[in-house]
Length: 312
Length: 265
Image (cartoon, rainbow over all chains, first blue to last red; front, top):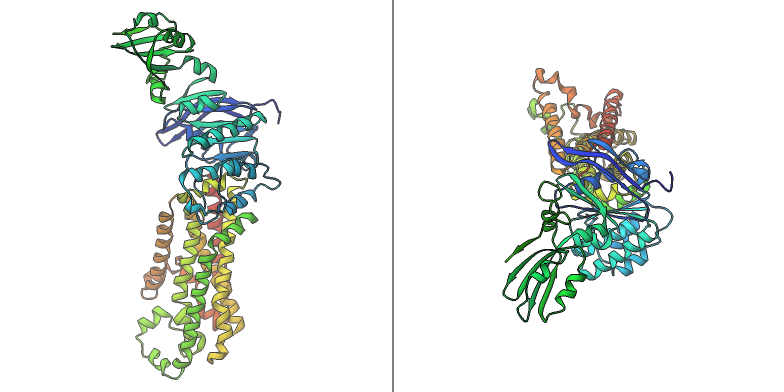
């Protein structure tokens, strides 16, 4: 297989469960050294896609290839090169963590170059019995199991679930290092900030269809965010309304609720001209993101450059 | 076949296998221990006075006054069948449907091991477990029979081993097929147990009804006749071939089905 060929290709990949839609007509191509975010709300078809990539579920139509091999027909060969963290990792409860690692290790003869490093960086106690582990520690075990052989491809379904913020940070760093070694990561998530933080490119899936595919920088620039500022004195809202990034300004006494898209530098500088009592800058959740960016139909709404609303 | 999975299967289920082994051995030794006190109690006369229908149900041809007849009626045709069938169905349904239900199948299938290898290896573990249990049952009886004053034929016990292996192997293979079909262990257990009970009922009824007797060959128990093997040392090769064919057919079916199905845990 060619080194230049994409590591993961989905061509019209479709899966129905009876009449229920899993994913429909998915076309994707993910290259080497890329962390690809697969973003969408619950039930959008993310896990179905991952199951087809992992050869657990057969496509109704279309095809997925991993490292140039058919994800369904050649799944055994593929798994020598792929690490997977499932959505809800289930482990052998009666084993100790170390025994479980040894067991999975036995399927990958040769080496486990990252095992000890991952155990240390994720602060995993390998002497505990799996049945006694917390949700977060189970997730750590699943991450070590998937990554310890330094696979060429990582397929991760909501991998940071249950990890505390410090561990999430460490995990994102590990993923970055993985990418820097030329590995490919397919990361499914419903957390916008997670995808924004670690991914190079994002595919947005909604109701079983891929509605957008773009570089993360582009997503960041076009994302709608909200800023709440309480000034010490009365401030005229119009000085903010005229800024090109601002979409709307709501005024309540000295409190301004500003909705903006794109870079914040100009707005922050404008705000800094006044005395500030408090300032909060909230990241939109996925639902807000979808409503503001795609609406319910999946069609782009509030596109960059849309008219501004000023609500008194 | 995958050696890692075979080793893990033994490691994971070693305690339950040990309990089964101790159970079948202990029950056999207990029946063995009863034999000396039963020998001179007129048990044969008592058996002869039983109604024909009862004798038919338990096996009219069995001579209760002999050691192997006593062991057959008290163990090989009764409790042993229940325990060994429970082992067969329990292991078979736990091996595939049980793992899917617990979610650990996703971890297993995430490794470079084919679905065929999973079914074949789990079946091999089951078969080796059967051999262990048959040995755990018969070895203490073979050793203890002279001590208890019973006469036993080594060839008869070897013949019984072969028949038991194929009979319980057939029960397990049927259960394996349903284990490969369902994602829920309870369903696989229910269907496998249902077939076994229906099979037993058919065997029993066919001894009383000529009409039902026409369908006797459809019962798995038709092919299990421990007294013939242990006492007469007579091989019913046709019956053994049927049991072997059931094993091959249902195991192959399990492989084919498991290779083609979705695994969504």
